Amino acid sequence: MKTFLLLALLSVNAFASVELTMVTNLGNIDISLDDEKAPISTANFMKYVEECFYDGLIFHRVVKGFVIQTGGLYTDLSEKPTHEPIKNEAMNGLSNMTGTLGMARNEDWDSATSQFYINTADNVRLDKRYAVFGKVTKGLEIVRMIENSAVEDRGEYQNVPKEPIIIQSIIKR
Image (cartoon, one colour):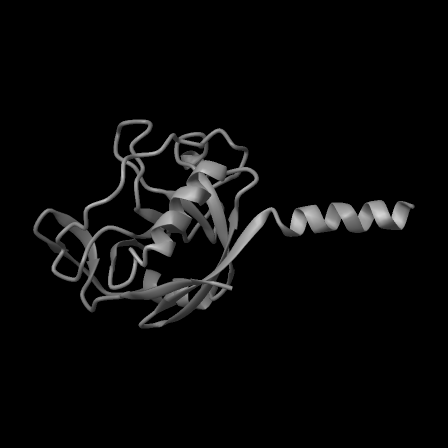
């Protein structure tokens, strides 16, 4: 009976995440989304994934020792139209640690749409402000390659990689 209960609990936990692969022009990054602790952010992200929204978008903000950000701009830095903003799940107990994914937003609390970032350092100062909803499970070396890209300021955007780093697709595993 105890073995059955343990297996049942493990099965439930196995379904508490969504496994994806982000294919970039630098390599693949496997990610796991936490739909148990961040159901709104996960559902929002998956809606964009299912629409192939991220295909062709760039990492447009790369700050070494902080974050790499993507999810809203084309190579010419024009913005892609998004769905309505979602509720901020920053109080979900997940922390902005190295390799975690968080929802980018502006100063308005509930303003996150499609943009997200990957923490390249432990950024606990972002906790309870920006919603973490996933983590990198494989391909942190690709995240580091992106983080170490040469960057420049372009118009209103700062820390834009000189050579475009493009999301080719995000696929469910």
